[in-house]
Image (cartoon, rainbow, N blue to C red; front, side, top):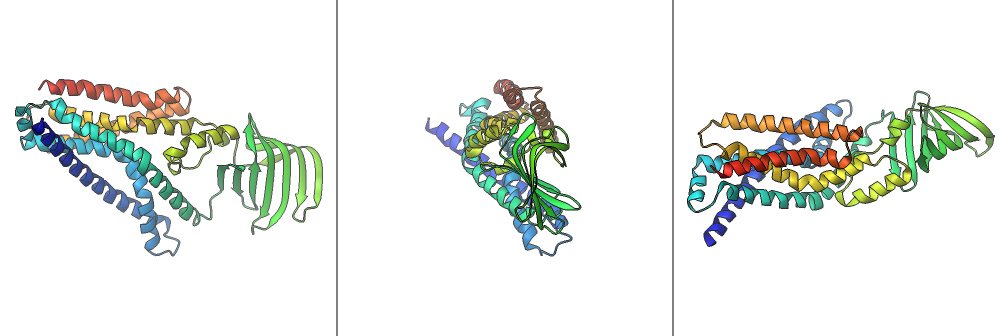
Length: 363
């Protein structure tokens, strides 16, 4: 028993070292790539080097979180390849351990790390992404529109050639924005008038406002009790119903509240529900990656070049990424339920990995 404890501790320690190294490598690569993108985005603005570096440091942790399943896959292949090339796996088998026993230790560790990521690291990355968007948004003067859902209602900002408008509505009901107010500004951002309406049919980009009142900048009512008025917008119903800010700004602990808020405002909650189930599935996704890495390396007794494993790692990452993306697209288009779209790829990968582990255990 003591020998097994020592070996398990050794496996955990070595895998953790390799995982840390891979995380650092991906962090550096992500930082450098994103830094060039930030420098390019600020090429017409004199901000020096501090701003691109600072923004890159804010956004890279979120990118690492998204890539972490693939980081675990690469780390697993690296670890199992290491103990295989050094014949440590042979010594472990002589001590009574099977391939499954060797694989399960990094697997259990990946589950713990996955839970830690979701409950502790994700809230931190969401704050960093919010900070990133706030700072970056301050430099995007030419953004044509902006929209947000808050406790005070639905807010939309539109920018045109001659005027800039801010629109507020209490909620979305069927095809209509209800209790809508449109604040109009001229090209110099000077307030000109306010349009109030009981509802606005937003099925098309040309909205149909009902029960309209128009008030100038001094509070004088120019027109009231207008039955119908057309308003040209950058938004239609499809854009409004799928509208939401970057999902990476939403912490795991806030998802349930955000879903309730979206439902209250009449918005689609599919994206937020997808994020919730993706969070629940995250630790199991990491476990499946460990199983796959074990299958790729321990299922064969032949000595093979490292180039093969590099190719396997890259090809697997690409295939899994597109598989997940395709499944998510089916979920967003309501071809599949949210639960099926999120869990189906993980169940398939997990099943394949489990079968492979059982086969590798016989080696």
